[in-house]
Figure 1: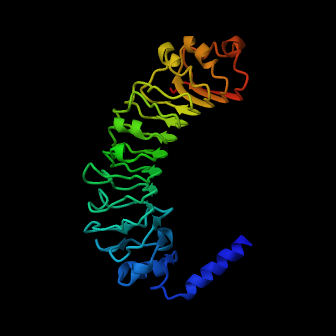
Figure 2: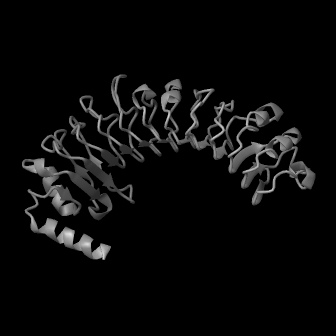
Figure 3: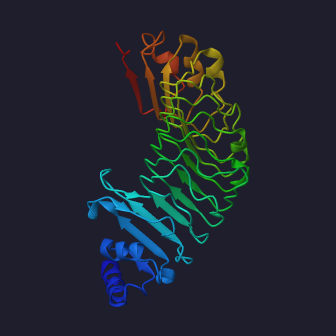
Length: 318
């Protein structure tokens, strides 16, 4: 029934003149509007799968100037061979945008005059961004998800003091990023922080007093050397291949994480097993062979750990 309703809605939209449609998802229709944007003021949603285009498209810097009602802009591709080029940059994005998903975005920043007050969801995978915006005082009061995965040229992230409702921050593979500003502590609704593979990241807050926080992933971020103070609400924690060494003192800092279900660490010392044993909700423990690995088979080391479903011991790398 749902598929039938969707097909009927699509048929109704397709019966309209493409210049009068408010939602565009067929690539031929979209390309025609992008190349001749005059009359595109009715468009509210635009979703372009570049893998259907199978060629590189060049756009003018004013391509979105007529789309003052645009709320959803989605440009994506499963094949990085096909993308949109902006030879002269991008001069305008409408302030009405609530969802912006643009894979392989080709410019170093978003337009300087863009007012992202309405943005709720921002996803820009494999972009060429070096920073999101020029300037410091950008407010994203409605932003909930910021996903800049594999934006390898990203050097600077925004000041979080203007992002009070952020729930997810995904910076997977942002290998040029050097700092997460301390202002992230102001994101009281933050649930997930992923900085997997941020190999140049040095600056990371020493304290994350966020009672909504459930996941922190610092995997393969070797320049982060200290485990931040974390709230007891945390459910998943990973710092394998980071610069954090989980000795007894560091292990004591996770003993209060009573809701922790998944723990991914590097080498562990003999003295820290009792600290892990206090984590009664732990379901999975992953660690690399270290001084404690030979003793881990002793049941009394984790005798209080009744809920742990599996332990994965990874051998040392040669």
